[in-house]
Length: 123
Image 1 (cartoon, one colour):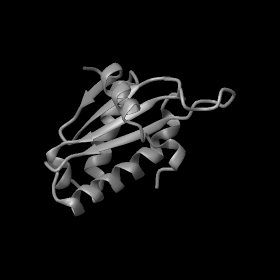
Image 2 (tube, rainbow, N blue to C red):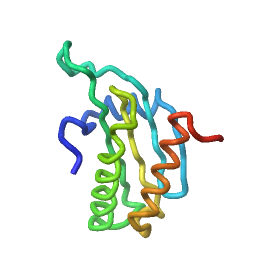
Image 3 (cartoon, helix red, strand yellow):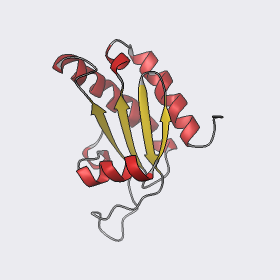
Image 4 (cartoon, rainbow, N blue to C red):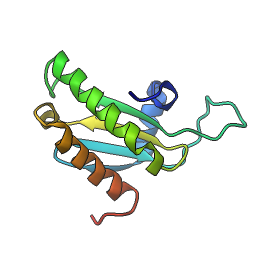
C-alpha cells in the first residue's frame, strides 16, 4: 500500500502534474511527472515528499477491475518512490487495456515510462 503522505489528493496537485509536467505514454498507461515540485501545503522545514496519484476511468472496466488496477499501480509506484526526485508529483493514468493486463505488464509499462521521463530512454 502507498503511504498516505505519498498520495496526491488535491485536484490542484493533479492539474499541476498533468499541465506542467512531462508525459510518457505506453500502451497500458500514461505517466505525468512534475520533477522537484514544492508542496505548498507542507510545513516549511521538512524535505518535500514524492507524491503519486492515479486516474482510472470507466473505460478500463467496471468498479472491481478499476479498483484492482489502482491497487496494482499503487503497489508498483511504492516500490519506485526511491528513484524519483524528492518533491516530484506523479500522475498515472490507466488506459483501457490496463484492465486486461497482468501485474508484470503494468510493471513493464510503468518502468519504461519512468525511465523515459527520468532521462534514461530515447524518444
